[in-house]
Structure formats: structure tokens, C-alpha cells
Length: 476
Image (cartoon, rainbow, N blue to C red; front, side, top):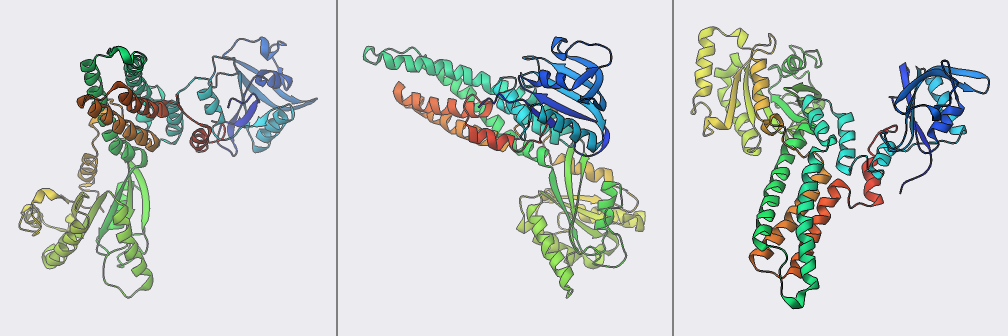
């Protein structure tokens, strides 16, 4: 699948900027760049320059100077792709970018496809497949946690753990296969007790990696949090307080939010996507009714629900709040529910204390154990209690593995392969416990090895690679 063409692409975002970087890779990359480059300090050809050097000069098209540039030279195999690579740093004008790219195309380059530079790095064994996928995750990371996981995987933390398990399993598989050649001799080269220990260890590691996907998926995609409640209780004000900006319209008029409003922030390095929903109430307004319907759709999608009510209305509307809270909790029993009394700045200290006691009382809301709920007193307008809410939201994410720098799986393709490998390893364990013959054990071992290889790329196909790298940006 390795293509011998020399490819070119813009490596920086499209559009005007201070500078732009144009990348070339392939066996003719240096020669093509050389034919368009005129150094201001040396008459030597770029091919005669040392690798990992930068040169000031001009990109020229015949007698015409296109731009003053810096050209970086990376000679194979010590480059990102494992091929000769040239990067041209030019001024960020759209016109200049296109003039230089078109010049290189006329000189023999072709435009790179999405992710082709990283694909070549994989095909030239500069990265394994899981590391290559981590490159895309690193580019798209938008919070501290997702960045940390992508960096760990790009450095090979995940793949090295998988490769080690695969190597140990492969050694035993070789001994099992060897036994098949001496079937008539009735000999065992693979120590079954040691093999059982290895299988147990592999099962333990696979289970840990599979379980980590729940955290990894949340970190990678962010945690959707639905903010629900009656109209005009301060949902939009709370969203603005969390975001530190006037994102949602705030008005004394009930029903101002006719549709859901979404925005994302990072709390403690974890992305949270807050959804401000239309207020839940009986209404004849057709547009508002559609918004309320969408509110329940958003609760379906959310992983955490915040129910907000006006603290000063609690005593008069306690029964109504109780019904709404029970309705949400009964419909979504697995979702954490944070119940917030808002506008506490309008209460006296005595009223606040009384409210706190009432909310903490297990009989206050006849819904069973208070541990099923999380109560917070808050003033969104004055940002009182917002920090406590952020800490509570962060507590719903198991960040222990992240703090301990453990391997966390974030890729659904890896997750699927791990599940299949775990299933095959279970079959191997069952076979060992049942005294299964080596030829039947070997079938399940081969399948487990196959799924391990799918993760790191020892086993792959063109369709799989096409699907993976199609999601990359062009120029990477």
C-alpha cells in the first residue's frame, strides 16, 4: 500500500494568518523543493544539507520571487513519515499558499489525501496503528484530560501494554503449535500451569482496559449535563455563571428559552457539555411546547441531570417539585440527579438553614434514601455555590485512573477488539480448565492474537486503514 508519489499539503489551518506551513513527503521531496528554492546564505543544494536543518531563502517560479520562506529539511528515515520531508514556512496569505502549492504540483507532487502523512508514518513503521490514531485524538483534544490520554497513547503507553501481552501469548502459542508436530509422541512443550497463570493475567489486564473505556469515552467526548426545571427559576443564569459569559438570554418573562442551548467548559481538565433546556410547564404556546418536548429528549441524552427550583418558592410548591423530581428520577434511575435550590441570596439566614434541613431530611421528598440525590444551595446570579456545583459534577467522573497515569481506552475500535480478545481468552481459559487438546486450544489462541494485532496494526487491511485515516485532516 506504500505509494511512491511525493505528496504535498498545507499543514496549518486554511485561511489567512501570520505564517503557513506547507509539507512535502516522498522520495523526490527534497529535489522538488530544491528546484523552487533559492537560498540567501548558501548556494548549496538542499540535498547536500544536513538533516533537521532550516534554511532562509526565496521560493521562485522562474525569475519571479513568490515569497521569502524558511525551509526545514528532514531526511529519511529520521522524519515523521520515515521518508524525505520538507516543510516550507511561508507568509500566511491565501494567495501565497496556493501559489507555492500549485508550483510544487507542477514540479511533480500530488495533493495528499486526508491523513496520508500519518498513514505513511504507520506503513514505514514510525508509528503503530494505535499511536497513529492517537495523533488524531491529540489534534482534536480540547481539555487537559483528553490531551493527557492522547499524549500517553501517542508515546506508545497503550500499544506497548498490548504488545507485551501479545508477545507472551505468542510464545505459548508457538509451543502449543510445536506440540501438534509431535502429536503421536504425546508430549507437552507448553507448561499448562504457567499458561493458566498467563491467561489469568491477560484476562485481568483486558478487563481493566475494557472497564476504562467508560471513563475514556466520557473524557474524550465530554459529559452532557441537562439543566431542567420550571420556567424563570434561573436555568439560563446558571448556564451563564458556569460559562462565565452571557451565552443564554436572561429575562424576568417566563418561557424565554424556547429551545435548548448548549455550550461546553472544562472543569478540572474534564469537558462538560451543559444543555440549558426550555422550562417544564403546561403551555398552549406551540413553539414553547416543542421546546419542552426537546427538553425530555435532551434528558435522554444527558449523563447528569440538574433540577433547578426557586428557593423562595419551595414551601408553597414543595408537592409540585416533589412530583417533578420523582418523575425524572423514576424515568432515569441510573442518572445522577443534582437538586439545586437557586436564588438563595433572597433568603434570610434562618430561611436558608430551614431549607437546608428540609432538603437533607429523607422524608422531605418521599423518594427513599437521600443518597440517591445531591442537594446544593446556590445563587446563580451572584455565583454563590457555583464552585460547589463544579466539584460535585467532577465527583461523578472516576478520575483516579487518570491521576495514576493508568492506560485509559478512548477509541471504540480498540474497545471492540479488546472485547473480542477477552472473549477468546475466556475460551482458552475454559479449554485449559477442561483439559482441551492442544489443536483446539490453538484455534482460540490464534483468534485472541488476531484481535490483539488489530489494535496495534500487525494485522490490518486497506479498508480499515481507509476508514481510520479518512477522519484525519489533510496535511496530517
